[in-house]
Amino acid sequence: MTRLEHCPAPAKLNLFLHVTGRRPDGYHLLQTAFVLVDRCDTLDFTLRDDGQVRRVTDIPGVPEDSDLVVRAARLLQEEVQRRTGTLPPGVDIALHKILPMGGGLGGGSSDAATTLMALNRLWGAGLSKQALMDLGLPLGADIPFFIFGETAFAEGVGEALQAVAVPDCWYVVIEPGVQVPTAHIFTSEYLTRNTAAVIISDFSRHYAVQSSELRQFGKNDLQQVATRLFPPVAEAVEWLGAYGDARMTGSGACVFCAFHSEEQADAVLDAFKRQAPATWKGWKAKALRKHPLAL
Ligand SMILES: C[C@@](CO)(OP(=O)(O)O)[C@H](O)COP(=O)(O)OP(=O)(O)OC[C@H]1O[C@@H](n2ccc(N)nc2=O)[C@H](O)[C@@H]1O
Ligand SMILES: Nc1ncnc2c1ncn2[C@@H]1O[C@H](COP(=O)(O)OP(=O)(O)O)[C@@H](O)[C@H]1O
Image (cartoon, rainbow, N blue to C red; front, side):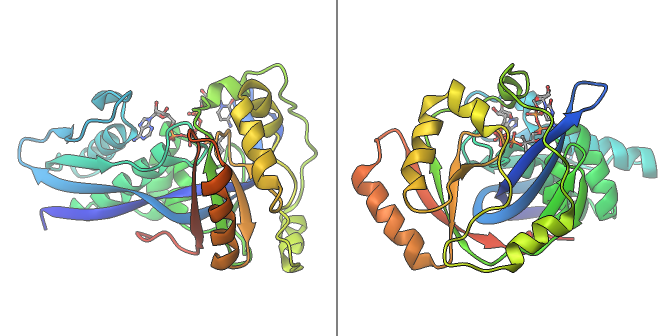
């Protein structure tokens, strides 16, 4: 095998996100729930015989050497060499992006996770799921979740993961036409960092009770900061909030709302097409129980 094509890198949503404290290194301690959805970037991998890792598509604003897919591939290549004494072949990576950057959908992290899982296969490297999760964490706190590959309750900076069940549903997601840099949110004076810790059974109990409107557990502590700094995020929460319990994912900018059926999601998107500002994008996605490349 010299090529792996059409490898999906799905988006994530943070169903809730509480900031519960801070680590001595300044990183924030979180509790969150991640769910995968079936809207994906796509990657192709082709081996090359000179040992180089190259990105062969242009991604405006992301130089090749700082792209998380290139950094992830080089990290795995070094790790395989360290373990086996042999450098794996090089690889050309084509990255087809549809997930917005700075959207809170974890696109960059998901691209990196897909790279680690695909190259582990293409290079026959045989690293365990946990080894890949550990390798990815220093590149991005969401990467372990994508390799974990199923709906998860997460703690720490997002790396302590436990599988949880949530109702199967459809999501409407709004991209409000702005990019939110994660660092802006975490360094803000408006961020509260002392939400009381919950336990996983609080979360599970919330979703065990079905209701006609799908209300999410808890809140997103980053939303109050993002809506203050980026007014289109606040406007998107307000617009989608007319149809249900709308909130921001991650550090923003995207806003989502859950629905029981695809028909309900379609009705909201019909209204979106008629009413939303031209700078916004709206789409629906189904929750994924498993990552398509799950190990
Ligand atoms: C907020 C979350 C929620 O899933 O996702 P996104 O919304 O960005 O997708 C993640 O925790 C994003 O983690 P990660 O992907 O590592 O964040 P980065 O963009 O690398 O972080 C940028 C900066 O934000 C700060 N940061 C990030 C995560 C964290 N738990 N505490 C922090 O203080 C750090 O200063 C870091 O240097
Ligand atoms: N492959 C990649 N795709 C997207 N962003 C990347 C990638 N590699 C590096 N980045 C950087 O990571 C930042 C965060 O991107 P992304 O993960 O898509 O958003 P978010 O963290 O809000 O979910 C981007 O603004 C970009 O500078």
